[in-house]
Image (cartoon, rainbow over all chains, first blue to last red; front, side, top):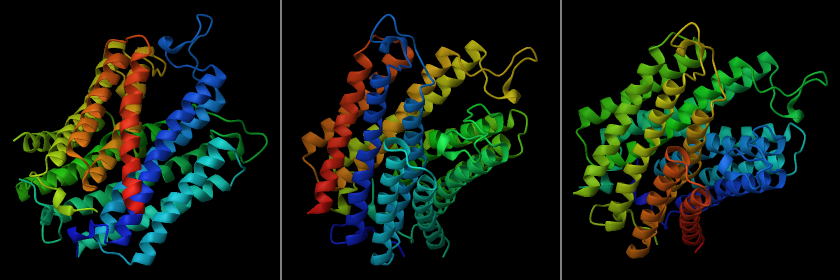
Length: 151
Length: 151
Length: 151
């Protein structure tokens, strides 16, 4: 069963979904800021009109900038599908305890993923683990949505 | 007219939307797995901390890895906008027959797109056709949403 | 408070959200078309099966194609999070005047961003300004959603 009335602040699952969604959206925008700061720190610009000095040339292979851009792209691949499936999963009226902890797992794992990938660079398997925690929780929610749709 | 009560399992259009959304979200995550498998198969890693042996170097130009990454990015460009506009289109109370077949068209076309792009590599116009079927269906839904919003 | 009944054509905020969402989704697909046209105009193809003539080779560094692809990726980083947070922000029952103008700001700024980035190429700070207007409005909405979730 699906219930539109689950879209309500009375529903703690929806409230937790909202909170983590807002945090993760702000986190995605923080990646844009981090990319910009890393571009300025390394004088790496992708467009001629961005060059701060006529002595600079466009550059696409700075390892620090590219690392931040990979982390950013990884967010788009993982966080964005979660934002949609998390909302639909909330509508399937899941166990509050399970749903809230799945949302927390995704939110915390994706923040850890960026920290170990693009901020402090911690050896593997730190990044792989944080990736799989968030991906596993999101795929589980998608399966639950699929089961709800099928029956 | 929009009706929040259309967000219900009583509404077959919403149920079909849910089903294809879940399938396509799992499909997006499958691209991450396929990228990882292709990286291991070709020993192509983008980060020093990922290198399995001190003899390896980071590498960004393996054609197989890059092909999977292009297919993955193409999913983000096409599937993600569908997931949002498909939900809003459902809320416009469309003809069930049309809506259900549009969702099927997007879901099947996007799976075919990946198969012919990154799994078996079939000559054009296979990929172009699957791209345009899904894109055309999604843009049609967006136009219907725009018309509903305007009147 | 959140109200599922805000998902209604009676709610002008939701109607404006719907309109801009539809426009921005169509705009994202227009980037695919623009990429394709620029690929044909410059004979720059990323896959062997796309080559129009046996004399051509795959090519990844055409500056015009890469510029359009950067603008497209920037849309995924910025428009897609807005589409989700804009819907949730609508559910927080915001001031209609403020919400409608925030949606307009995002919609217009993102169209201007593409025009100055990939269509006519206007010197900075045109692109930076359009980026920050849309990003600022979206992050503001995310903060409002977070505050609503917390209290």
